[in-house]
Image (tube, rainbow, N blue to C red; front, top):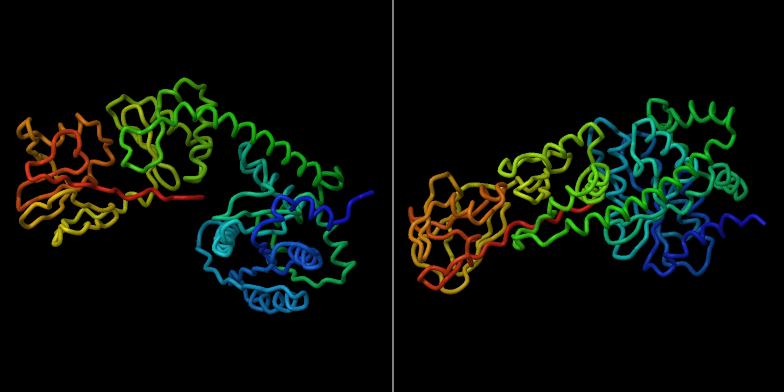
Length: 436
């Protein structure tokens, strides 16, 4: 006997039955209306609420929050309307989606679940759309059933349900939903596939939608195996950094070099996925250039959301925000308290603080430093001796007393501190970049 839509839904959602709360992404369209109605009429679930994201992209949308409120009121469902600003760009669809999921992330608390209404037909469209764009296995795996979202989870419980099943349910219960006028515009890529391409495919292959959705499932399983392989390959490269105070993602290069080119790319895709949008196939030549450069070249590979640097036999990820550092001189008026450096962490003294007017400056070239037991040494040579990554040298805060270079914090601990009995401690800016 074929299971009911409610039974299928609850089976998919069983891993999250103990979540603190479930939030239903409620656009007012067919898919989310059916999802909302199904859950509102089911007992013994976590606390339920609905979220309506108002993009403000068309005049017709101004009436949708009121419709959603009426539906939620009739079902006794709390509703939160979130208005978002869609950033202009080449793809309005993508910008609206990013704004929407950012709103979902803000709404979901720790361990809470956001439920969206994408179904089997949407999955088939996603696969074909990405195939036409030349996506790899990860892209062709389509939309995952679930993924992390901020401190909670995003779950798509209807991915194995066809649009026809949702329409049958909606008509059976006489549900009313919104028809977004933009869904009929073939100028949008997905609409073109939905209204022009899939009807032709279905004439020749009636099971095209379910077959494509099934293929996405196979590719998702294949991607899982690639992720396991990447995890094993990255274990050898995930060696402790020689600079533990520098909290940037990094990997040892030598273990990666031992892998085939395909396994290198697979491992790097896995490692870079939480940090940046990945490059297309043509841009992977940048990785080869970085990997094969001479040891003293210090090459970099620019990606969408930052840069991958190589320093010696190690690669480092620098997010785009990392470069936002002021190099202006900063006076340290109260050395008893830590000094905040704009975009560059903070400094503090350990031990007795030195006398006199103090200031923090950055490298100009030609600096020398008095090293206890070694005399005056050229700062550049000291940095080379220590092996400090090149991208950090311009950010290194230098402590001056008048015109005298008094201390360099990152060198503290390599030799005894100054006679005054103090050391300068630097806590660089943290790299807290999450999902891109």
